[in-house]
Image 1: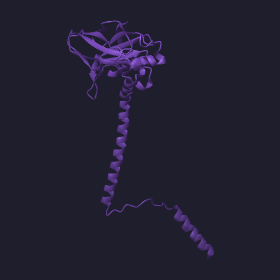
Image 2: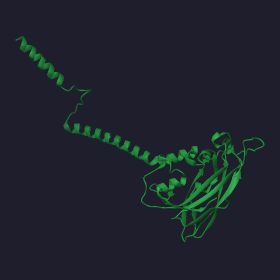
Image 3: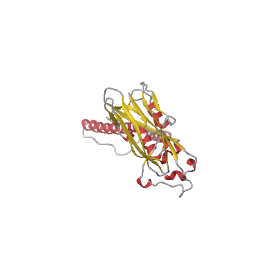
Image 4: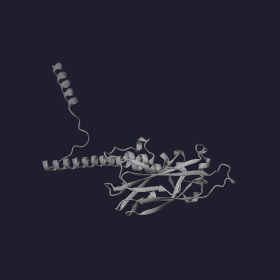
Length: 263
């Protein structure tokens, strides 16, 4: 009898240990319809959370390149010139600072083969002191018989001087529309920040090249104007082709870039 009793207790204990234990309060439903409605509400919430996460990751994917370019514009990374701070417009005379010297800034230009424009700098180069503003011009002509909107990309070399190269005014800030056979002069106002004199990596920089490429403009899915060219061509014109973060999936359309002028 003792054996049977112990056996029953052991069986009961084993059975209890195998039963799933409820975690948290068990929902009480008044009827089956209420249970189904509650489950449907939870499923909708889960679907919304999942959808929000997917959209967030998709948005980050599309924003990766624009954010990278914004970072480059803010820091001068990858040869992207900075916008200017007015307080920096103070020329440094060599008589006041032995490190100061005139730096040669050369200009080059090119256009995509899909853009029937002539685009070239009005001057091949200028010499500027750190902190001294300088005005240059580029000339563009629409050789077609239709109105065309163009957008320009740019980069400066060597890369290490880019953080100190600032633009006050430039035609590349906005799209440019040219009428048939119209010729326009496009201004560029820039300076090289005086802090370049304190950067050891720029100590021996005597020549700087500022390059522009004009593309035919197109509207993207958001309705914004952008260069009508494969992404790898645009990245190359910006000087980003060596940086993996700037790359996007290549497009099937091929557009080459031809140089119009070399300094």
